[in-house]
Length: 302
Image 1 (cartoon, rainbow, N blue to C red):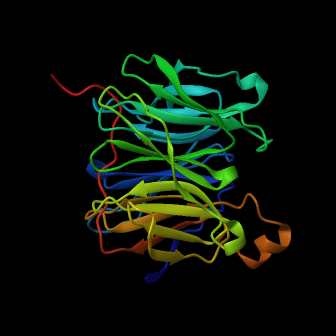
Image 2: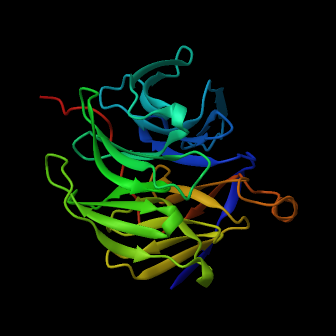
């Protein structure tokens, strides 16, 4: 098994670092501090200039997905899904509110599939024992449908290379499930792909990404590591971090061979934070297998 060590490239101190997104045309990595209500970006061009950008948001931002038409982004906020522009200044227009935010429900994690739909999970914001979470599909016309329910902490939607399997996580239960998915975006019955056991030091499965060989990289909250698994669930590589709570990961850089990892201060005691001063930082490590470009929201050009 391959053993790697990640290095901190930006000591953000994020309360809950999430949703890393590599945008090749800008040579820029985006990420959010979900509970800090901040969006960040790091320029990583050929010269490696490392310019940093940050935007303050009016509400939690949970994820950011590029649009196929290039007209800004789609963004998941605490209380719904919005069309987001960053230039010439930050602007938001809500397009869907698929749940009752007044009941304490919020969005958590999302990805687009190859057909340009967004798959987004929700959860109760404070009581993780409640199975209030749903997995929804947002279509090109901004209509949405609930595709699965009964989740505690929805995390890590990811798709296999063929687009025939959707991997989805309930972090509270330590469970990753694999759903068959058809060309219309309809889900079949899920199968348990892997059960994680925090007692074995694994931590809970959180955000994930798939590489060009179809293997899954999974951030393990509480486990201080991100691991690579084969499609059959075999452990292939472990990336160790000097912080307890990695929250999500993506493959980016000009050759898609840098694994970027977001982490969180949340979930640490004062003593743990004192012992892990880089908690909430952005980490990176070089890997041998490239990732795949992030899928985008919207219909394909005719």
